[in-house]
Every structure is written in structure tokens, then in C-alpha cells.
Image 1 (cartoon, helix red, strand yellow):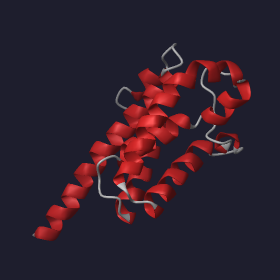
Image 2 (cartoon, helix red, strand yellow; image 1 turned 90 degrees about the vertical axis):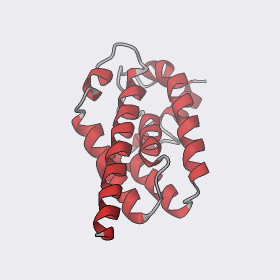
Image 3 (cartoon, one colour; image 1 turned 135 degrees about the vertical axis):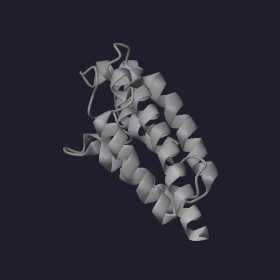
Image 4 (tube, one colour; image 1 turned 180 degrees about the vertical axis):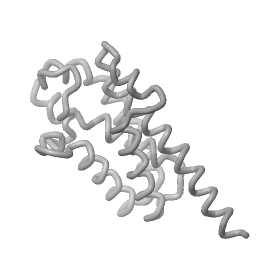
Length: 152
């Protein structure tokens, strides 16, 4: 059972990449969004990665021997898909979503750090979901401004 938890938490061992596992997971999501730009895929992955993230967060803390394991990248999968949720899946929007998500996920502004510091293992997932939400909102604003500037 521990090996299954590790496989899910690390999303097929992507989280075991020695450096930049979170970024690698985010780039994988971007690749999926680019090559399979069907919004229902993003919706389904977002839903299932959120559910799986909350379900395995506590056992993953035990299996991965850390209260916030770097190898746990299921949260990046959930957060990055949330960043792309309900926006046009174009190369520009996908790249902007990646940059925004990594910005919010790494710097942890606007309450994200508080969620990251939660004592409960679910904080592992919550902080990335808030980073994904902020990324999605910022992306929508940027896309609106781009569209508005073209209309002028």
C-alpha cells in the first residue's frame, strides 16, 4: 500500500526528479494542455487530482517521511490544472499560466504561505490550489487586457 501512495503522491515518480520536481510537474500539465486542448480533460484532471491529493496527503507525509514532502507533486498537478481551468487553451495562455502558477507557488504571497504552514497535511494541497486560483484570476485579467488592446 505504501508504494501505491508513493506512486500517486509523486504522480508516477515525477516527484522523484532530483531538482525542480514541482516545475517539472507543472510543465507536464502544460504539455497535456497543449497536445490535448480539450477543456474536459483539464476539468477531469483537476477534479481527480484535488480529490486524490486530499486523500493521500496524510499517508504521503508518513510514506515520504516529511510534513511537506518535496516529492509530493500531486498538489502541483491540481494547482496547475486549476490555473488552466475555463480559459482558452492556447500556447500563450498555457505559458502565462505556467509562469503565474510558478510565481505564486514559489513566492507564496497573499495568504498562500499561511496555508502552506498549516499543521494538517491537507495544507500541502491547499496552498497549491490557492496559487492555482490566483494564477487563473491573473491569467483571465491578462487575457482580457490583451483582447481589449487588440480591439482598440
